[in-house]
Amino acid sequence: MTRVLEVSGLRKRFGGIAAVDGVSFHVDEGEILGIIGPNGCGKSTTFNCILGQLAPTAGEVKLDGRVVTGMRPCDLNRLGVSRTFQLLQVFPQLSVRENLILAGQEHEGTMLSRLLGPSDAGLGAGADQMIGFFKLDHLANTPAGELSYGQQKLLDAAMAFVAGPRLTLLDEPAGGVNPTMLFTLKERLRAINREQGATFVVIEHNMEFVMSLCTRLLVMAEGKVLAEGAPEAIRANPAVIEAYLGH
Amino acid sequence: MTRSQRFLAGAVGAAAVAALFVAPLSLGRYGLYVLSLWAVMSIAAIGLNLTLGYAGQVSLAQGAFVGVGAYAAAILTTHGYPLAVAIVVALALSFVIGWLLGYPALRIQHHYLAFVTLAFSTLAFLVFRNEEWLTGGIYGISDVPRPTLFGFSTAKPLPFYYVCLFALGLASVAFWGLVRSPWGRAFMALRENPVRAASLGVDTRRYTLMAFAIGSALGGLAGAIYAPLTQFIDPTPFTLALSLNLLMMVIVGGSGFFFGPYVGAMVAVLLPEWLRFAEGYYLIVYAILVILLLIYSPSGVLGILDRYLRNRNAKAASALRAAALAGLPDEAIQ
Picture 1 (cartoon, one colour):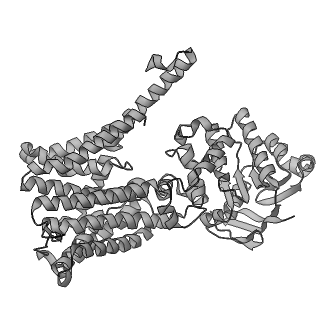
Picture 2 (cartoon, chains in turn yellow, brown):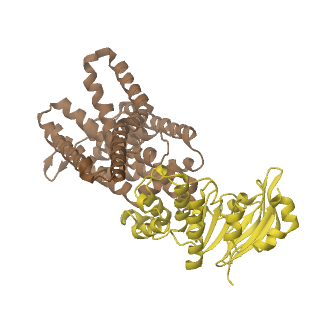
Picture 3 (cartoon, helix red, strand yellow):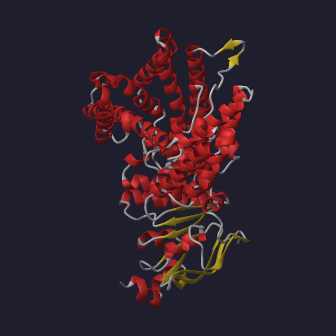
């Protein structure tokens, strides 16, 4: 199986605190890896170090066997790594359609071809397809800021998939989303995974969501990897119950 | 916007353009100068609207770029070069300087960035005033010629007004194309959320520098037209006061609205003329009007219009929904 992401010995210190303390894991093609752990255990910091938002103190990140540690977020994204953030991040003044076009427009051509090319950068049809796929049809031309929270979450996730990424890192996609929307989200993520062989890493606190979506779980505690394995094995792991699930 | 609103906007736009062509025929020398100045200031304000309104980068140096363009044009045309060459040089020079001034914006934002650009503004003024060998120092450069185009002299106020108007038209079309292209979307993303923009592949570094460079180049273009308009330049018009005035134009007109700078320049250039009846009190009246406007509508004159249209459309939409729920045909509520 092809190894898409490989993280080894990742460390990030903020002053005297080691937020991430020697984390190593890998993700294979087509996998949905879930990362769980109590608040403040370094899940989001791990994401930010992988994605170039933060410079890791030590360690290495490999994408398809190529070292990408410290690469800028925009360059990593163009290599096929996309993400969503823990807090909602859509562009409120742009319409749903514009948000989706923006999410794909920097992936093709050059600065000059974008300047002289069509206004929708040739992505209008793709954006409309994505709008349909995430069931936002009636909202295509509505400013994203006017959508409900759950709809914005769906848009946020849709934006991560416009450019057909190789690897997608989702930071708490289910947070604050109502059960109906959550069902849509989970089912859409599964469909993308199945149909396009897309690879995901998901940080999530909603256990029911993680257990039913992910093929493998990584449990973090205090900046370290506590356990790793299939959802059932993790559920039965005493150390995990002690650190997290038992609370 | 609905279709009828779009039609109305088109009609208003066409009428405004027609008025800009026809109205000056009845204006005197001074009236033409004021209107020409409006066109020139609009160009500079369009540039600042890109940097500030679309890309969200604060700049207090736009006046200095008008100065850079004006000096470049004055020096070249008084040495016998045609205005077209001077304009190209002014554009290129202010583009490059603007690009360099963009670098601090990669590290700092908001009022800190304002201070850096303020420093550049002061620096430019000192160069204009002290480098006598190049700029003529406090005596400035006089007898800046107006060009002869296709055998027609534009030395008289009316023909030169059309030169200003043509430059504004060209800048407007170029700007329209720019903000409608994917670049415009990337600039707005930069303003609204640079971290998210970067995570979607937007090279925020390059777009920030571009926003500064293109905005500054438009300032330079305005300056290159300003020099032959006044036919005499010295350092005084290009102080911080001009930068602040341009900033006011963008904000009063409506920052981030395409037509904001035209309206803002109208307020800044024409309103003082209309307030002449107030004589010595005109600045006080002017200041009060601007303050009241910004209290009532922080998003400027076009912000008022935008809010009005949004409200109307929202009401129409909810009326449609209500009618649909009640099972009424659409015509019943038209």
